[in-house]
Amino acid sequence: MLEPKKTEYETAVLIGIINQYQDEDKSDEYLDELEFLTYTAGGEVLKRFQQKLDKPNPKTFIGSGKMEEVRQFVVANDVGTAIFDDELSPAQQKNIEKILKCKVVDRTYLILDIFAQRAQTSYARTQVELAQYEYLMPRLAGLWTHLERQRGGIGMRGPGETEIETDRRIVRDKISLLKKKLKTIDKQMAVQRGNRGSLVRVALVGYTNVGKSTLMNIISKSDIFAENKLFATLDTTVRKVVILNLPFLLSDTVGFIRKLPTQLVESFKSTLDEVREADLLLHVVDISHPQFQDHIESVNQTLSEIDAQDKPCLMVFNKIDQYQTEDLEEDDLITEKTEKHFSLKDWKNTWMNKVGDDAIFISAIKKQNIKSFRKKVYKKVRSIHVTRFPYNNFLYPELEDLENES
Image (cartoon, helix red, strand yellow):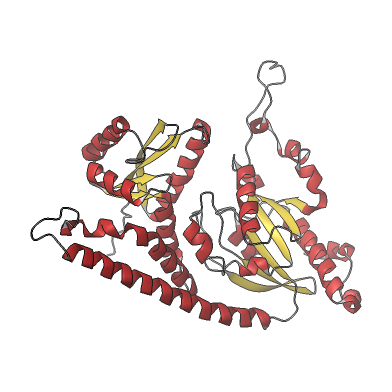
């Protein structure tokens, strides 16, 4: 008889700071996201530590008193990993490991680790491997501490330095090899994109875990992996979709996230070619997330980095079934009404009203308002198609004819 498999989670603590750029609410929000990242990577968070600092301590990121508090908790609870919300310098990481005597990981490496787990194709694995080596390069010194190269003296000259330089040379060669491999794959993918003809290309973009893959499955009637975890989709998937009798290509891309490691932005720019070459972007937003406006800003910033910010865009506000608002009594004259008290109707009357016809509110998982969503996509794609092929407009009916579509 088979025994039920138990999932072993690695214990971890989270560490963040509160400063002039990141108040307590923002710090809590980042740590919430960091906890979700930790869970996605296979970890269980036992406790969070925060400290108010004008700027991170150059030696240990946080102050000595707070570090001692963390150390005592790590020892008492046999914690395996300490995860920091910001990227640590090689020196900081080395110093912290000496104090805590456990694995020390920053946000950047945690995201890299998740990407390494999620990468399925050779292309994605190559991109992640390149990002990992570029992250590892300045941190190689810490791997050779057993050689005591810093002490000098009789019997201590030479070998340590030689080992480090050899290792650096191996990593540099590996980075060069991976970049060449990516160039070769990029050429192959460019040929594939060229062979798709002149069909209108639509790309799903958005923050990670907003429901892009679920929406892709509904529209394209395919079976793409979707899960309530960050970066569930890493490989770009392209499907041919037909609404009524109008065909177009729909691609599902990797999700974005705040504080995205620079190594990943560089490595995955080629993956985002699908976004750069798209004729229409479907910007999916998790309206149920308290900070969804920050998510929109993060996505727009990444789109700007890859020169895709000026493309036609349809804002798709997803997860309306999960949207919750804080109740405000009508006779409450003291409490000021803020965004957390907004209903969906209130939101539609804010800046979203200026978006006008370029916005739609749906629930992909509950299939709410999907018919209206398909109509909007059809209208957008048709307007692009008839511009590209002006003599084909009679082949595709006007939007009103979609009323009978199931």
